[in-house]
Image (cartoon, rainbow, N blue to C red):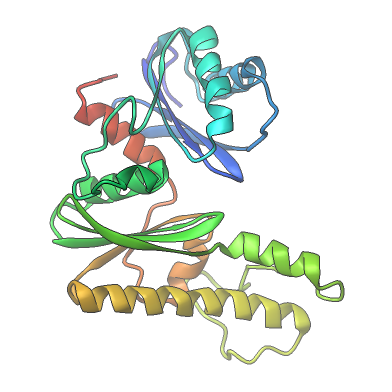
Length: 272
C-alpha cells in the first residue's frame, strides 16, 4: 500500500473483454484491476469507478500526474478521456497517436497493428534488452504473436483466442459442459496422461494442449526465420496456465501492457 501523498500515473489497457487499470508509482505498477468492458458506460460512471480503485490502492485522486491508454475498443475512448479530465484533471494520452511507441519497421500499414501489440513489443524489449529477437504472445480475445529484432517489428500472427473459442464451443454444442481451462494439477506439473477419461477433462486437455501445440508450432516457425535463441514473452489471462505445459514460453508477465504504459511515459520524460 502506497502513502496517500504519493503521486501516480493511470495506465489503461482496454480490450474487448476487460479494461485493465494500472496505478503506477515511481518504481512499479503499485496496483492493478480488471473491469468488464462495458460499451455503454458513461464517462462519469468510469470516473467514479476509477476513483474508487485509486482510493482502494491507497492513493488520492488529486495526485494523478498523467494517464496513458492502449485501446482496441475505440467506442470507449471518449468516455475514458472524459473520466480522466473531469475526475483527475489530466489528459488521457492514447497511443500511438498522442504518444509515440518507439517500434520501427511498421511500414505504410503500421497503423493497422493494434495499440496493444505495439505496447507489448515495446514492454518486452524494455524488460529484455539483450536478446536480438523477441516474440511477444498475448492470450486475449484473440491470440497474437509478434516478433521484433532490436526495436524493429518483423511481423506477426493472429489466431483464435482460447476463451472466445471455449465460449463459442459451449454455445454451439448443447450437450457439452462449459470448458474448464484449469488442469487441476500441482503448480508446475502436468497430468500423468494426455488421455482424459471424462467429457469435462476431454475438453480441458483439448484446449490446454491444443493451444500449447498452436503456440509451439508458430514459435518454431518464427524461430526458423530468426534464431533458435529467440526469447518468448507471454501475457494475457491464459499465459500462466499454458506456460507450465509448453517449454517454448520463456517468461510470463501478466501485467506486460500496464508495465509498458509505465515504461512509455518514462521514455517520453513524463515522470511521477
